[in-house]
Image 1 (cartoon, one colour):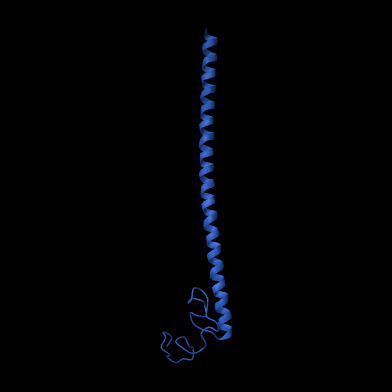
Image 2 (image 1 turned 120 degrees about the vertical axis):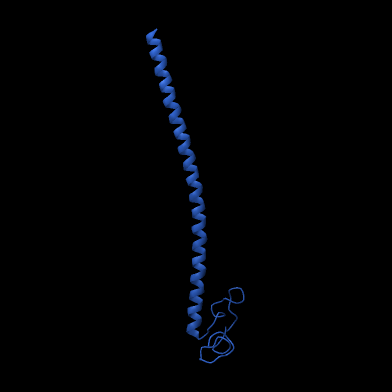
Amino acid sequence: MAETRDLAELVASQHAENLALMLGRDRLASRVLNMNGRLTALEATSTRMVGLLETIAGAVERSAAAAERGVVGPVAAGVVAGGRAPAGGARSSGPWASDGEDNGGDNE
């Protein structure tokens, strides 16, 4: 009788350990799925950030190239007309002229 009780206690303790391991495994799997979702969201965010940085770099390059040609102002940077400067851009006359004169713009 004592052997049967000891065997029953052993089986019960093993069953309890197995349940604890299964619950722990399920929790771990849930955490892994949660982290996977977070990593996917982070990857999407970093992809958008890379795109934004590439856009900014392109605008800086266009602005530098325009400055080398003597084109000045926001039109040169492609700020006007949906990101594209008009053909020829704004030359050194008009409201953004850099000749030191007040040509009606904000640059005095």
